[in-house]
Length: 361
Ligand code: MRU
Image (cartoon, rainbow, N blue to C red; front, side, top):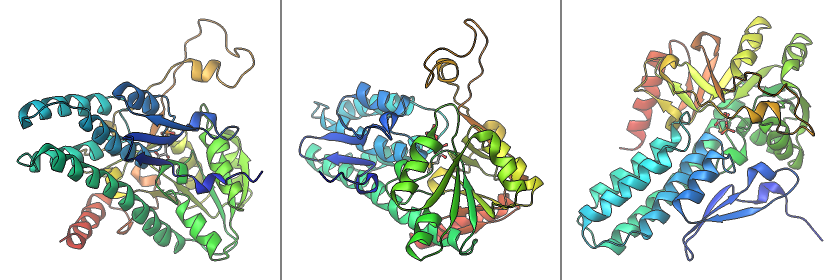
């Protein structure tokens, strides 16, 4: 029996007939590919919190579909009653994870569309909300493709590329962000050699990035997180591409825990460290990375998960932040769908948003 390649699945989708959110349960990959069908607020909240769907853009798309699905369940004839319930569900979904700004970005966008169409009949309003959610997903594919094009200009055939966590297709609608230059390069015969950090404690690098890239025929090698210095010192890495969950106005970047270690090591060995950032992940309202909320997760992820037996003493203290902030001076460039921003980021990111504004006029 031929098995479908993981790259042929939609990371996030909607069944518009049954009004269900469809996601691949990423906690079961790479062993099992299971599609979850979700329709209640609690199911959608849990899926985001438990990382069944994860990665900043994929969380944003899930939230957009999610709030539409929940809106279809609201029984109210007048807008004020409808909107009171809509806002309640919006805030509930928004509380599922704090760091990736795409979650609130997508929900705000859906909210704005809802309010702007308050005079429409319920069915028409729901159609408009669905259109907006579908647009968020479709735009994400275009955004990733453009990040891939700009990223590809920064590397050459045969290069070694290191990446951390999973900023791949499984974290987006298509192509991924950090993996987009790799996939485009693959199509164009670049023959990259990729190093995927396993990414403790949840192993997104080993389970997801390595799976995606390997399934796509990319030359990928999994390394433990504490091996990145060695491969860089050996001269095997020409560039680092990572994704991000929130970029502050000064370029400080929150991404999966361990990213700032990679950036620090990259600086030491003169390897350019690039952040691949859709503009939906850039939060110009925050002056610096110090203001980015960092999610802390359960101790069991560190002490028990993946192990046959608990590997740390009972009762020991555990610190388990899911993200860290890479200081902007360690970043060689922030690759967006509107070009590559370079230091000083306070200015270059503003220019990126100016380009975005001009493009949407
Ligand atoms: O906790 P996760 O798996 O959601 O963390 C994901 C990351 O840190 C990714 O690098 C980031 O969201 C960018 S995905 C294009």
